[in-house]
Length: 521
Image 1: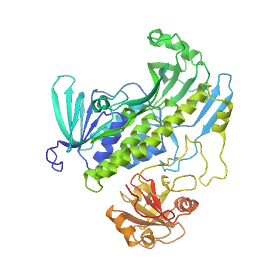
Image 2: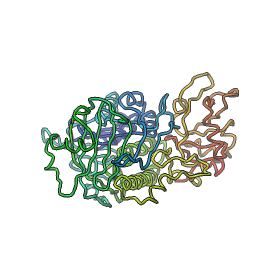
Image 3: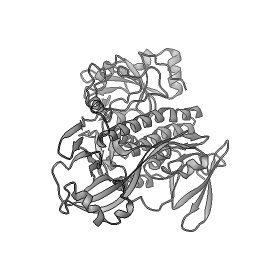
């Protein structure tokens, strides 16, 4: 037992499932000092690519975990999205503006991925953490808990030997059919669509025009998803017609006519693998039972049209991970864990609804009025308008103080330009900010704007106070930053604020305009 794990426990946190959600949870917790044991029933990474994209929000999480440079080497920038008919008419297009969240020099908003490759790199990152143990081939067969912890019973799939592991908390990231969720007696509410889809993953043999668009071929009978993946892979997702079944496509030879109907030839690609799946719109009735939390597909399932299923799980894991790590260290009270579902469920619901709406377009179920509404650019907004699919993230509930909305800075993720510090170091904002809670002042010391009671509240959270100076000014003390790209100060001015309180996940929790008291739990 690690020396700092409390008596009677083998580890701080048990993570059940080691896909992208479990990986993010384990990397977040272990990176912040918690001892983690992860259980993964399979020995190898699931070979089929499922998710196809990550965006700059997810990349910012990778940056916080210290793995973004490595992940960026195995993914590729995405050009844009378009919805077209078979006769070549473009119904809708979503261009990707440059990121405001500061991913890298080119700062793309979206990236194409090949999920097995990305997962393999994340696993290699985990192998470098001495306080993270991964038990491959270990299937969790029982989860029991009491007031002090969780007892995990796992069975070695090769030998049949069973082991019990005692943890203070557990995170179930074991997929849509989550056995842990069933152990807990938590129901999944919602629907599964009857239509069966075939996913065809291919190796690219030559470039073809506009391959780098993520194209949705809209059609009432045979809509198609057509997307470039990273590392020389390409995917098509095609619904089966009534009367067609998996048995009609036993090998690639039977699949080829589906691609040929789209103009794809043997000169273009080689079929690597194909699989079948159905779309789900389902969510768990609760994301927590005592000391066990559900994350990712274990607590929400959505159609693929918004590219947010895997990413929503990774964001669940990061949100829960940074809070749980601080609870384990005694820096935050256990009541902080109640904010996990309060913050993450609305965001998962948002992307589920967005995916359903975009699916109506591709399946030609949307009315002309609905399509027009999706293409409408809102005017006279305080926040520059972007389509919901590409707009920067916003928290709508949880540990916040003040109203959210177009004209409010509350709940928004602070942009991440290149900044400088008082001794001339230049880096992206997150690389210069202290870890934890930070109050940023617009060319002012934010501590000077606080009452003694407010400062005592932030001091109790270990907050730091940082003045952000314009690039045309001198710094006036240690710990200040310079807005070298003229991004942060104009962003604060847009919302009429002089100071904001930024959470460890870089969302704004409070501002001077709505009161800089520590938000209530």
